[in-house]
Length: 201
Image 1 (cartoon, one colour):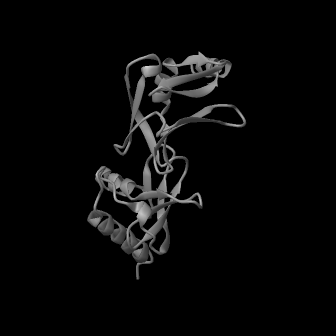
Image 2 (tube, rainbow, N blue to C red):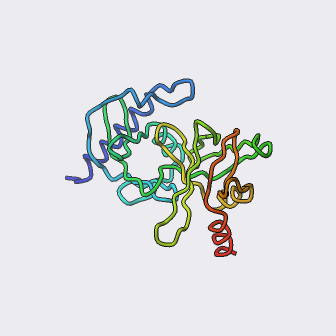
Image 3 (spheres, helix red, strand yellow):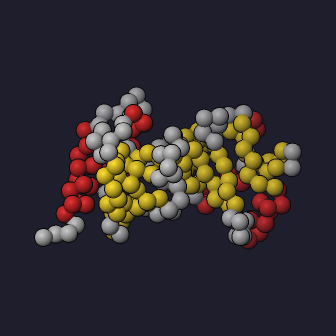
């Protein structure tokens, strides 16, 4: 008897249910409306670089990863789940579930618009509805930048994109940050930003 059969069946069930789910106007299923029974942890994990794993092995099928991303939900308990009308399965997330890998810049100054694309082809324009935020490591003060994608789901901004972001920054009230859609997003004190750039020079 295959001990992995129950988890494999659960995974196949989630895939089948996700494929049947109807997307809304934005192509995303209404996972916020579904409250199925919790079905446990079957070994799904998202690493900090955005790579999805199942039972310790990377999931290489991009269409499958994209499918999973459309039914991912971040609940009040702080956990992430794949949610369908009939199942709810925990997904371990090392950092953020997505990674922002591209940034498009239009305009300048307060009218500047920053539009991000993730590794699973979601898009978010930084502004009142999609905040940028920075967390600093308490030990070495290295930054981890994030952009809100939807419904408590965030993308970690990749290092290359973050340095492009820093290149657009300016200082306002002693805070170094960037503008997007007339919203100023502080990154850090200017001295800290200079130290980051020197460390990576």
